[in-house]
Amino acid sequence: MKISIALKSLLATAAVTLPLVASAASTYSTGNGTLTAAATVNFSVVIPQFLYLRVGTGSSYTTGALSTVNTTDLVTFTVAPGTVGNGTAVAGTGGDLTGGVETAAILGNGGNVTLTAAATGALSDGNGDTIPFTQITTTAAANTTGYTTLAAPALSNTTTTQTVTATNKIVQADAKWTYSFANTVTAPAGTYGGTAANNGTVTYTATMP
Image 1 (cartoon, rainbow, N blue to C red):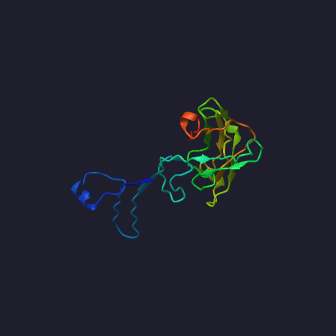
Image 2 (tube, rainbow, N blue to C red):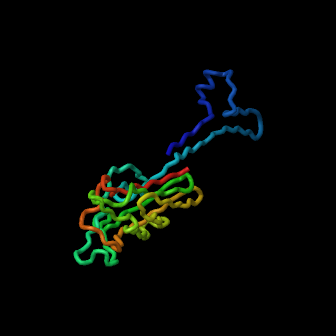
Image 3 (cartoon, one colour):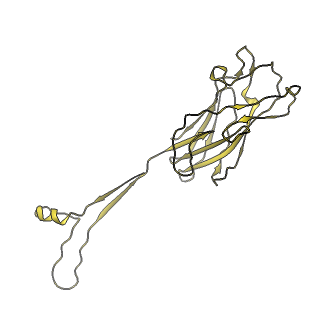
């Protein structure tokens, strides 16, 4: 935050040095009875526009110490033998909160925010077999900050979009996002995703006008 103060008052020494310069920021009164002298100060407060997005490991955002953290978390789902495709959801491991749970947060001061989740295709094992991203569900739960709970965009093989509504142009929303594997498809054995090459990366993007 930058705060600039323009003081229009002239120093007395400057007034002595430049006696012919008139200034509305100083008033000289003389005479008998009640005297009044006035001076003016202009104040200007400049608030920078900002936008912060966190999904997973990232900087603190409740203390104002916003920063970029170049870390991408890995959430892994391991289906037990004999349960493949039986419709019983599988919890994840990993995530900054462990157990397949990630911290998600958006802060901004420029109005509504558009949040997208983009994948480059279905999860691949590199051998031609795929699992659609719709098999990975995201459940949002309130965090402990008191902010608005940030709903999670549904994952797909392409891009999904949602709007985070601002109040008086301010967005303060966060959540604990829990990822689960729906396990309603029967797929060949293999490791799907995990790397960008196997379409394992989802990119979340926040956009503010």
